[in-house]
Length: 185
Image 1 (cartoon, rainbow, N blue to C red):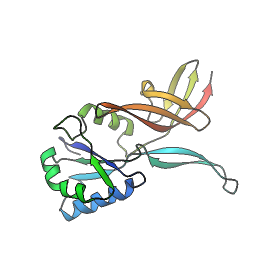
Image 2: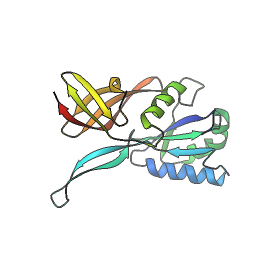
Image 3: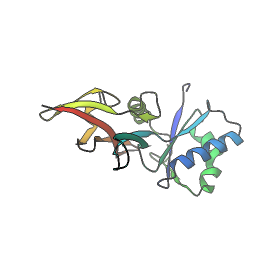
Image 4: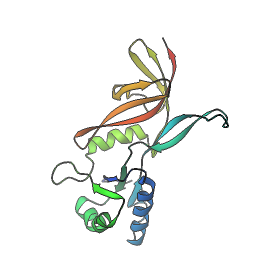
């Protein structure tokens, strides 16, 4: 999206993220906005699943990176965004609230947006990462977490995920991302 652009974040009912994304897109379409002006999305991550007995093998499935959060990328400034979408937010049964940082700032701060964009790497999902452990040090050799080893707070090798901690709206938010440790030295 062309500069300047903003990310607004909605806190929604758990499990309704995809429905809210579709509702926002439909509402934006009725207002005459194109995908270049407003794009709602729910960042996804891959989750490792062991197959049941009747299924073959092991596989990854996508799920929301942040449960109960829906993001909107737009060129609309805060005042215009609230003017155009304020009535929609208040009338939606699935949107709980529009998040804000401070009294007058509803857009995700630039440094937090850039950190998420780096993690997403131009996509709308965090791809799985691969790495190894040498003593107490984790080294990521491929995937979205490459270069982000400092964000990892916990690794579960059995279920193949890492828990990362991100700054969002002045607080810490945890998320699980797929990480396969191929070797422990």
